[in-house]
Image (cartoon, rainbow, N blue to C red; front, side, top):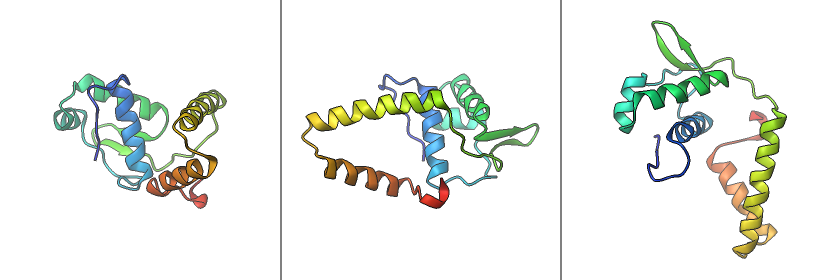
Length: 130
């Protein structure tokens, strides 16, 4: 379900945030579903509980999950996507880098577009979900 690359230059807590967002997007976790406790997830992934806690705090700050005292942590039922101009700017810069790299790999517009379509399909993003 959740994969962490110990050799990645991306901090583990950021990888965990991204992985949890992806499993929610894929529908593996639904709004209202309970997440493993910090301790349970840290044991499953063999990572420090503080790292899991930091990831959960970030996801809670983004209103993607919610912690109900004494009950656990759940996928938020109230999450609504919102535009964040700062994050959009970073995303645009990241996409630019990816497109430049794709060009140097010999991919044309058609191949890039098809790759994006496949990824969107994998993530089950549909127009009605946006």
